[in-house]
Amino acid sequence: MPSRNSPIAIPNDRWIGHLDMDAFFAAVEQLDHPEYRGRPVIVGGLGPRGVVSTASYEARQYGVRSALPMAVARRQCPDGIYVTPRFLRYREISDHVKAILRRVSPTIEAISLDEAFFDLSEHGPSFETIHQVARTIKRDVQAETKLTCSVGLAPNRFLAKLGSELDKPDGFMVIDPDQIHEILDPLPVGQIWGVGKVTAKRLASLGFLRVKDLRLAPTDLLVRELGSTGRRLQQLAMGIDDTPLSGEVDSKSISRETTYSFDVTDFEEIEDDVRRLAVQVARSLQAERLVCRVVRIKVRYPNFKTITRQSQLSVGTDSSQVIESVALDLLRLRVPLDEGGIRLLGVGLGGIAESLARQLALFPDWL
Image 1: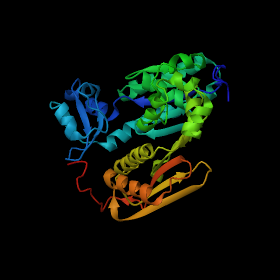
Image 2: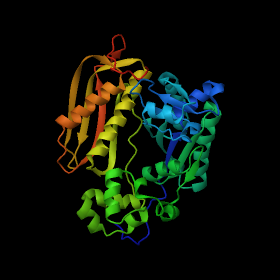
Image 3: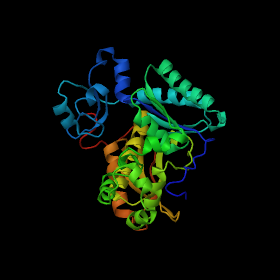
Image 4: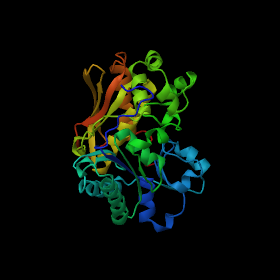
């Protein structure tokens, strides 16, 4: 590992892009309903226990954000337009965006309907060529879908996603290897992958508030306080991430996985990721009008030992609430988390069939 003050060894022959559609679900609703444009649009479950899935940028001015309880959103933005998700429509546009990416990239890692990584390394080492290809993707997405996206381009996954996050909406940010310190150093440590609320608080107690603090911290101190996670967080603070793209996920498998760049030990963060993955697989079911009767969870430990646990449902369901609840029960009751953290987490569905009979949540998302 390089010393804290040595130049960062970032390869300049690898270029990874990250595309994030801007306020995707809400933007689609504004596209299809011209009367919604310029107004706060909130998409999500409209029942008493519903949550916000996506909020337009107009709604975000009222403090409405994804995962906010819908009841709170209504109090903060009483004049907003509240609509239920139309996953078939979102899937249609998502597939179009992925088709645009396939024109120029052999490897696509779809994270969700509105987000994907893509590899442009085959276009050669020329920065000008890579830059132009990425610009073409952004241009084509807007021209063909009438929606905007934000694109980050960098030598690795972590920096590419950071780039798209730092320049939104309708942004385009290239992080060149020579800019790593300049861009990363001033950011709060919470911008680093895997630094959730608990870890951020722990780092703050050690005096590490900014990414630069983490980069310059004594490695032995980080390892002593955070184990192998501390070493990996410092690598990310240096801009180092050699995680490969996993390739495009076949939606018919109805499973989603996260391979962490470091071993995650924070149980709260693991639970949050289970919730996120459960929502993603549920959306896939809903978009294809399918139901499942089996919910699975997959965990891989630092020593590469991998376990799966599953639960059988009495009837088929496509409810994100049901799938999330079952997946969390599997995690809490049947997955040992005392083996030094985990390196991979997945949620999968089985017993898939057409939605002839489906189990509804007590408070369905569409109420």
